[in-house]
Image 1 (cartoon, rainbow, N blue to C red):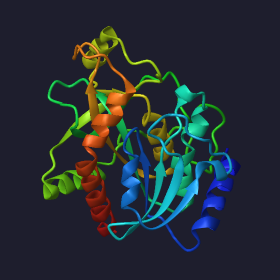
Image 2 (tube, rainbow, N blue to C red; image 1 turned 90 degrees about the horizontal axis):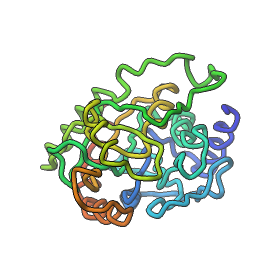
Image 3 (cartoon, rainbow, N blue to C red; image 1 turned 45 degrees about the horizontal axis):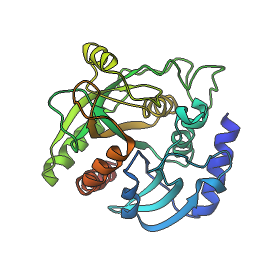
Length: 275
């Protein structure tokens, strides 16, 4: 696996010349427009990168964008791979591992999520304080590659306290309300049943989605500092009487795009200043 990641990273490194990304950003459903914020950009379609796959989910463009945001060099993954598309977890976490091999030190993961916490409303942003892995899988299963990280990586601070403080500071300076929350990661692709949402609430989940968890595990394993932001695009089944559909997810994400862009851009600026 390490040789695959190295090959992918080497290909990107050739294409971006002397650019050296400090921060990686993985963009979730309906949030891809953030890539428009990148200046001095170089774009690489996933289809050209060794071992990357074309994206099949609407709202995931499928390209790498490298350049600067708020004066900080970044690598943006505009679209992700999901296990429910039939990809292995090794493929799902490829962008996170490539981020590290390109020399970045931080990773921002984003997603669209269903709100379980009654304090959340569609369109609000939540930074993750922890997660619950209910995918019945883990990207580290199998022979451990010591070039990635230790056999048993610590996950007691999967989401960096320091980076979360930066997100809070960025939100305050931009006048954006953000909530803290715990994310439950399921494999999908079907939405959860009302009984499953009741169970998730009981075990401590504030929101639920079908991504993020494997990437965060792999990022911690390889030594990246991680933070993650969810856009609450709908209320989960049983909390709302509305039927759930992906078009609603994209629509609400688009409505929240301006404050999402502002929060991520300002967070990147503050992370860049925190040398």
